[in-house]
Image (tube, rainbow, N blue to C red; front, top):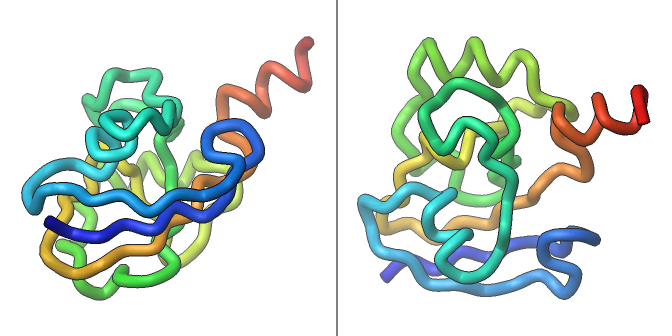
Length: 114
């Protein structure tokens, strides 16, 4: 099992969390399995950027993002050099520390039009 530290997020994980996940599982699936209800509007089909996360530790141990993922990340709020889509991030054996950004593209749009 791989250890994942999730930094505190006001809505999804107010206290932060430390979870264990199986290698080969997507980061999004691991978060959802532990009750961290990260947005994933496209149902993990790599068609949006709502499951954007920033990998604060362990980024270099992950497989590289595909061109498709990189193109979608360009639309993510708060893009960072260590940004990934959690639905496309395959967990390996290295521990990870992840941050769920404060906003998603969905939330930003709702606030502007709401």
